[in-house]
Image: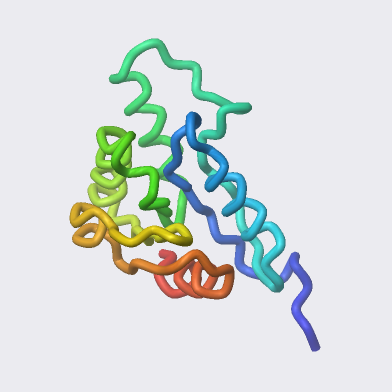
Length: 140
């Protein structure tokens, strides 16, 4: 008997991304939404649902709250170079909370920053099966 979505574990994910380059973020969200027999909740901070903060300190506090309720943090490694400060902060927050981190290497990307390789529990390619498998494997 096949499981229906209501019987599936709900994986709570935080996807690190930059609003300026959010195409990869939305592609990943669509991939996860369309993945068969996979249920998830998006704890990310998309542009259309931004946090109400006025300082970096407030933003960091809000990010901590977002990440606290998750099973896993996902880093799209292709966004690293232009936004390393906040990606590193999100990684630091995840590590302090003992949240597993998976890094996704976008299609066509040749290199992955060493900072991401060292911190991630797993580095995977841009493939629905690989991403869902990593989320299931590493989620707490």
